[in-house]
Every structure is written in structure tokens, then in C-alpha cells.
Image (cartoon, rainbow, N blue to C red; front, side, top):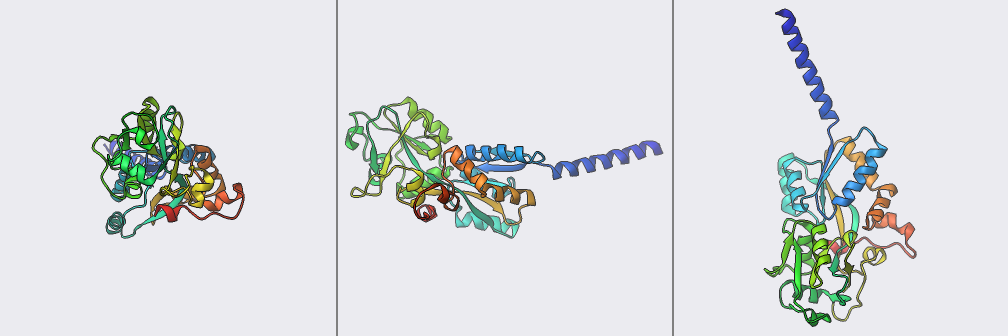
Length: 298
């Protein structure tokens, strides 16, 4: 009996020690923006190869999903393609006593997607607003063929949806005919199959479709979403992409963040198809240093 008790205690001790080790070696969780999920996965792949003892799990679901997970304490890092709202930051502060750290990790030119056969080459922000609010419904109204415009959009928990609504629609409502899809890849796939379609999303996803020039207003030049125009602020719908982490993040999360912001981590941003932060991009661009897109994206 004493032996059984001893075994029981030993088994309990082993369980406690094992649980402790599992806790110490648990994966770093990254959750949020579907726009950023490819970038997060690539960072994770490279970082885990460089640091074999580290495990990183990356999932999407939308910026709103990542922010909710950070508020609930169920993710270590939130990826967001929009800045957190003050009330969201306040919720984290109320629950944990400290607000989150906001860390710009990459820059994006929000791209307008068209089918490869569509002859339209540019839009003004006003034209995009009129298209997505239902004022313009035919491609001939913007220099295209006589055909109905089919709208594709992101779901409302998407940071890209929120950014587009604020900065392009000026907070007007999307037309009810806009078909909402659960990720940027889904939008690209829909547009690639439909000559009458229009969509929007991160520049890194523009494969199998066309992106077009955008101009701030009717009298402004039309601008392509290149690294130089996005980082220089001349492309009118440029934005930062963010990581949000708790103020008291553990050392492994802090090391990962530092690496993502390093030249090596920022080179991966370019490999994926987004644009590195200006301080690391300057060496690969001619001319004087460019200002951050943060001033454009707010």
C-alpha cells in the first residue's frame, strides 16, 4: 500500500513536472489578419529553422478575431491590418492592467483587383467609392465594357474591410450586392474567374489577377502600388501592418519581435510581396529616405 502511494505520488510528481515542461515549451501563438497570414507563416517557418527549440502556430480569421483573442488572453501576438481602436486597447488595459504594444511590422499598398481581361487601368478614390456604394454599376461608366460590375469584399471582422470602408468609402455603407468572402485569397480567386468582378486586398496576393493605378482625386496622377510609391506616401491607400503584443510579453515573444524587425525579418516581408518598414527599405531604394506609410494609414 505504501508502495502504491509512493508510485501515486511519483506519478503525480511526474505529471506536474511534465506539465511544467509543456508549459515552458508551448508554442508561440500568432492570430488575426488574413492579409498577414502568409507573412506570419513565412516568418514562423524561417524563425523555427533558426531556433529549433521554438514552436510557432499561425492562424488567420481576420484582424477582429486576432484582437478579440488578445483581449481574451488566448494569443501571444495579434496580427492586424488596421490599428486597434481606443476601446479595444482599453479593454486589454482593464483586463490585464496594461495596454498592448503596437508594433508596425510591414507596409502594404491596398490593391484593387481586376480580371486580367478587364481593360480598365485606373480609378480615382471617388470612382471606387461610387462603385462600392452602388452609384456606379456598369463598367462602361469607368472606361470599361458594357457589363455589370460585380462587387467582391471582405467580411466585416477584417481589418482590410475596415480600412477600405474608412479610407475609400469615407465610412459609407457597402452596397448590399457586395459579396463578402472570408479571406483575401478567396477574393483573388473570385476575381480571377469573373471578367466583370472587382475586389480589393493586400498587394502580396495579386497573382492571377491585375492590379490597377489609383489616384487621390480626378486631378491627381494615377499611381501604381510599388514599394517606392507606397513607402513614399504617393499611393493614396497605403497602410502599415501591425503586430500587437501584451506589455509583459515573455522573452521568447520579445526575441521573435526583434527578429521580425531586423533586416533579415524585413527581407522576408519583401519575399512575401509586401514592403519593408522604411528604415530597412532605404538601402534598397535610390534617393533620400522615405517617410513611413503610417501617416497615410492612421
